Length: 103
Image (cartoon, rainbow, N blue to C red; front, side):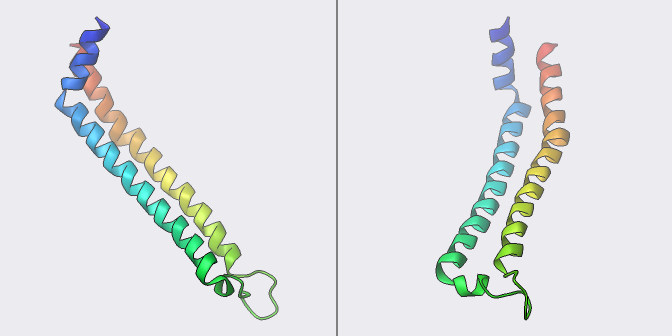
């Protein structure tokens, strides 16, 4: 019986749509994250003096600190975006697929 359910899920056009949407969204967020982190590494490699510049005269905090923290915050935001979409659109599609297959 489980094989029939699995086969029904694989053949369901909504399942193919789910896999395609989820994959595209995951790749998009991954590429954004990769570009941000690689850019940060390139700035460290090729313009360390820019990151080492104090935020204002007399400050001990350099530009690198808020940029690094911002990078971490953006990663959390992107993860949150994925969770929100997964809990709404992707879970809805999954429920529809399962209800169709179990009929």
